[in-house]
Image (cartoon, rainbow, N blue to C red; front, side, top):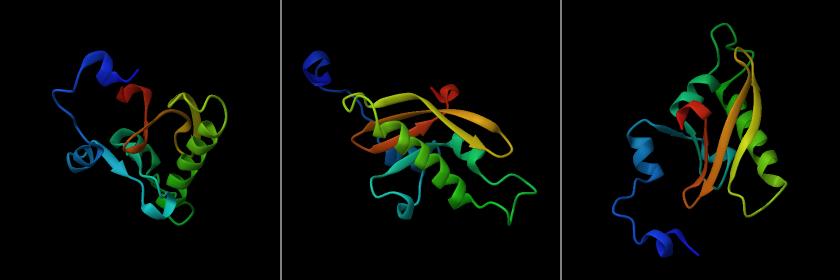
Length: 116
């Protein structure tokens, strides 16, 4: 049974593209993933290279770390479950960061629990 069958048609929708335009989501560059992957603005701020780490780490590498951990989290378990709350990523400067991921029609969206 679909959500539309349960609740009827939505009265309003808000797309990932609109959220990017509004600055709430950041699109991960396409070279890191063909299906779209989005990071919440707050997670993106943690992924940015911390001061003093320039030249040692770069933004693309840090985004790739987050994307790869999310892929790993979604690769096992129940394929019907489109949400994961147990993704852990180690980001230098922030330690272990807990990330939630949701797969929907827009792609994969990764957020911090505090974004919810």
